[in-house]
Length: 227
Image (tube, rainbow, N blue to C red):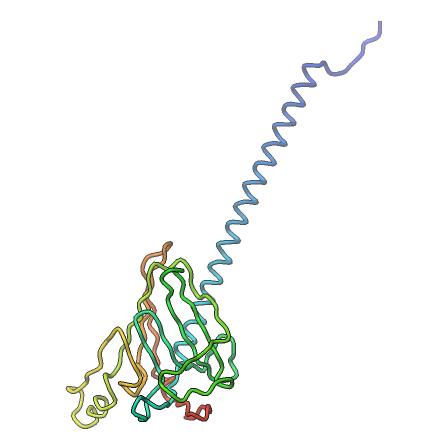
């Protein structure tokens, strides 16, 4: 009688069970790793887009320049509408068009909980009045999931108050923070714009932008930027 070597049925079942368990654990580990990698990649992409939009937002605000237009009484005023939830003005740092100055509007939409940016180039539209009717060509969403946004402005209440400083000195400095800033009243741009926003995922944050350097330029009604 010859000796035959091999596996019994029980040994074969045990080996098959162990192999199936190893394959299952390997597949589960790979699935968890893949899911975590996708989540990290999505988080990285979201952070990158958020950071990019913040930089674009900053560039637009800091590039704001005074556009001289006609007021309600045909007097020369500055085209700038600053409100608690929106900014409407002219910038040399457009998001879509960097070759010329643009008319822009940044607005918080409470229902959508988004901060939107709209733009039209000054090559396509001639703004002559302080309250023009403008159809924007392009719009993007800068931020999402915003619980609230507040714009505040620091500057002179009017041109006469600034001129008094040269005459009377610092004691007559009337610069202050306000929730609105209208170029038809002040006849100048604010010196500083502060933006506070509250997102669902992060605490309340604030950004402060200086317009002092940008205000050295004036955009005339001929749409050419001059110093």
